[in-house]
Length: 500
Ligand code: 4AD
Ligand code: MG
View 1: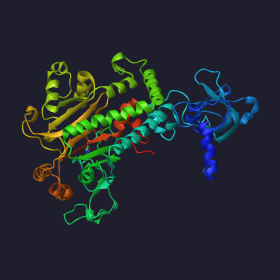
View 2 (view 1 turned 180 degrees about the horizontal axis):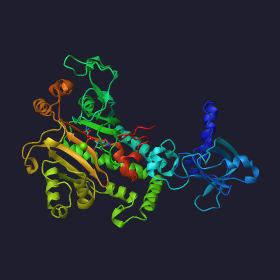
View 3 (view 1 turned 90 degrees about the vertical axis):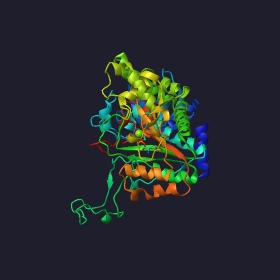
View 4 (view 1 turned 135 degrees about the vertical axis):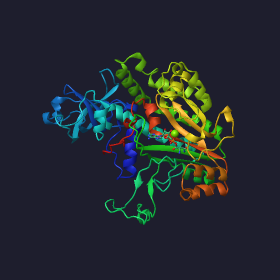
């Protein structure tokens, strides 16, 4: 009786730590018939005034509670409704019913919080994701969202474990910053200025010298530039924090606030970077396969139910767990941008004019192009490297002219493309040559004084280095098989929406 032993040990060693309940996951894993347990949680279902399925977040499974209704007050039983919060003490017994091995025969029932079914916003029936998003304060109690958020936690833990076990240091990049790491101008301004009475300079511009930090600041779009500072001192670092983009993209893959993981490594080139990203992404998937089988099985069933009435071409090519295994067991395809454009232009789709955007050297790959490469052509994750310099960020390392037979300048960039998701990672080798970087900063029209420290990193004790950024929610989206990025973050922030 492992869990009961834990209870006693705690009670004996420290009276203040009183374990009032046992997690349902622990009860289910230690099924000793006849033992008394106290469990607490929320009611998933209550049938015939006799059986209750209790859920407490610790497991994808519920615990069946058997209630001998003659022994309990009728008024109490009436309150055991969908998502009511109760505590139950009773003995474990073998279950006669199908679907579970053990159950608890209730001896005592405590009502913590009733949920009036007439007024409670959720109902025990199918409810759309859009509806549940509006009820984000209750949606985590549903099967689907509790599984998603358990897995989200698991991936976050695995990220720290992966890097820690390999000698990387977790670096906390600032959230408020004066620089635009991506140079894309998609930033949220941070200010304490009175918007109704803005201070102006003589030439009429807003005077940010009068602002809180004495300069214009914004929420960070990426911790990479600070990560580079860390890498050139600690060798191997990673950031893992919230990042913010004021891009007006209302898609199933974009959030205004999302979490990013950005490893940065000294003495790394683009090849090392590709090897790291492939090993890292496979590790995360394997971790979830090994530790969240019940949640994945539930999510797989959910998808099967949703797809029952869909046309074959709209269904997933493989069940979720099979997709994850496939990604772990196969090598990612690695191609150059120049090759990708050639493949796209040789495709039947292009020849039959089925792409909305023309794949053309020098232009960014569109989502439809990425989907074709990943889902139609290679049918597995693809790493595309060496993009045209003109369409990528200022900090990426310029390749030797003519690399890969490209008709123009390329940079040592790499994007990882996943089936159903598209870009999950963007990364690069960094430009470590001071003069080349300075040229790029100027060419991008970035004020030098904004990046003086970044430039100085190249002047004093610099070295080749590389890194990448993994969009955390895109990875959670892939692993859970959910359809919209808003459903894998507890409280999504998107254009026109910042509730909760
Ligand atoms: O490709 P991005 O813009 O790269 C960077 O920010 C680099 N500084 C990373 C680095 O080299 N250290 O963003 C990285 C990843 C994307 O591949 C995508 O997965 C995710 O972040 N991402 C978003 N996820 C959700 N919503 C958005 N609006 C996103 N924008 C980027
Ligand atoms: Mg990118």
